[in-house]
Image 1 (cartoon, rainbow, N blue to C red):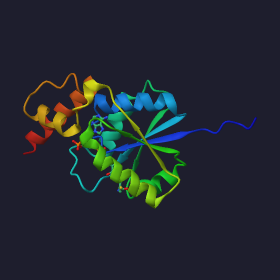
Image 2: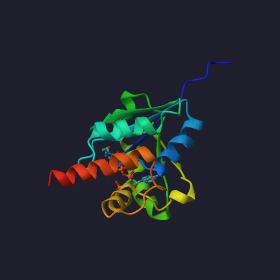
Image 3: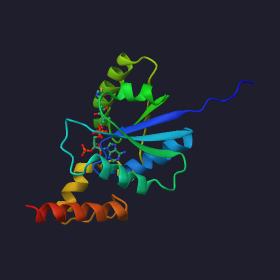
Length: 169
Ligand code: COA
């Protein structure tokens, strides 16, 4: 029998900041693949609250107990980064039907750019199906409770960031 090939998945996103919904997907993917790369996109379409290195540091902290998950960053096209890292599949979370259209478009464009790249959709736990990073940021800005949505460490970093932004005006 031929030797089993190692399978690498890429879970890309902005992660501004990482939430429990993202962590749920990373755990599910890590059970299916040998390695999961959590790829922090520089993302020129968004103006993130946290820098790329701050986002990476938070992710690293949150996934330290998942042995086969690592964090990295990428600029440019996802397909180019995926080839560079020998990625077998791109993981995307499908939270609700409303995600589908955009996700299908992205998967098909990526496939058009690189036919060998497979997109795998995973459903996060239903508790997180309505969650995104913007909601978490907004709740934090207005003093809402975010304990259920992000790990303690991320909550701490978020409040710290908002406080430092306030004091620098
Ligand atoms: N749990 C909680 N929130 C989730 C989630 C989950 N499982 N999955 C997604 N989200 C949230 C994200 O936090 C994000 O929230 P925000 O808009 O408030 O920041 C929102 O849902 C949208 O997520 P997503 O569509 O994954 O956007 P993204 O910004 O996180 O990632 C990239 C998009 C980076 C993957 C995409 O822009 C990309 O590939 N860029 C590289 C350039 C490229 O190749 N472009 C061509 C693509 S066809």
